[in-house]
Length: 206
Image 1 (cartoon, rainbow, N blue to C red):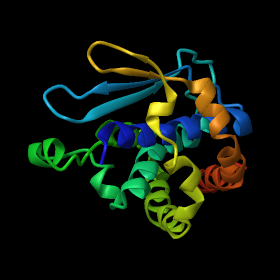
Image 2 (cartoon, one colour):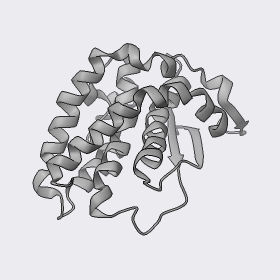
Image 3 (cartoon, one colour):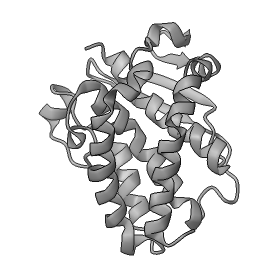
Image 4 (spheres, rainbow, N blue to C red):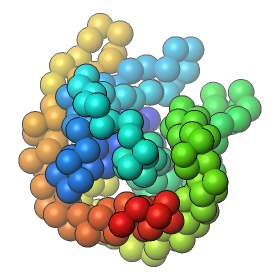
């Protein structure tokens, strides 16, 4: 598998969550940069979707669920694309061989972010319920409708490269990507809406 394509799909997961968080919930974390960078000393790539804005509500107790799901969505898309289990991507601890040879643990930073959100005192008491729901019930549901992601998985990273650097890093054209994802975003919107509201309900927010 082309690893540039693999990390492209992973970051699209974060990109989709950021976009739907913004459009549905007015969560102000819309993507401004989408970069793919070689992982030093390996044949693999790392990715980043980034937003430079942060409003006063970006890290409020009410939006913890939005932030949590946004961290989760990269590995969700990657494991469905690669047809591997979730814990092959979303893990805090990964051996050197697994990381450098088998390319597991790509979501290590995401897993650390999810863990960190779950340790916040306001949500610590129910963060395990969040994780159990999202990593078991929701993940199982998404696996059962994997064809739902077909439009995303058929996108080719080469069609979205905006700029290539001398070190083989790439900037992705987010305007073109957003247009290409338009149909998927509409299709996925109710699924995302229901997921966030499920976490809200566990948290006790109506």
